[in-house]
Length: 278
Image (tube, rainbow, N blue to C red; front, top):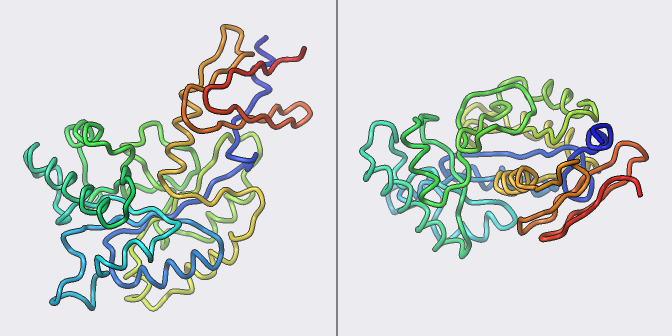
């Protein structure tokens, strides 16, 4: 029975082996060019905005305008970064709630959808802050601690990215493309600020990476939230004692591949599936 169970591997939707996602902070005007690059290569990203910083008369040449958010980020994800980009561990519990919840509400009003993701302003967080986030409807939050690896996080409220875009991006991308099939649900997570490309005059960094990584049939190009939801669904799968009957109690399909023969199985929401040999 154990041999049968070990022959099963989770894969991403439609049987894709890898996931690639991007995470960019602050909502400055250079996001426009970054979105164009991602769209051109069929990729998705998550953009963490400070709703209180969106363009007013005094800063329209720095930050995006509130009324362009929905159209600009269509097909991508808009997520929380704190209404005023404050350092959360230095705030009281009530102040943390206001900083996050006000941003979430404002961004939901701008986009017309649910906002459930986040990145920590300045990359700073604490156990106390993490404990508050789950109560505010936040499913994940990104840190700035690079792993240089591709494993999904143990705790999505402390989601450490693979790398900053100036942290050996091309080399890591090549490693990711060559990741062996036995690595389960690998994800490459790139983060940064679009104003860094403009300030450093190095848009070629992301252009070359997107050119190398785009159009790959075995990569799922997804937002942060899509990856979080999917991996959490795989972790919520219920199984029989012998591991050969699986039930999906979640609202999204989970995909598995039986290594022996390479059979791909979709376990739909609420479905119970026997994966052994009959």
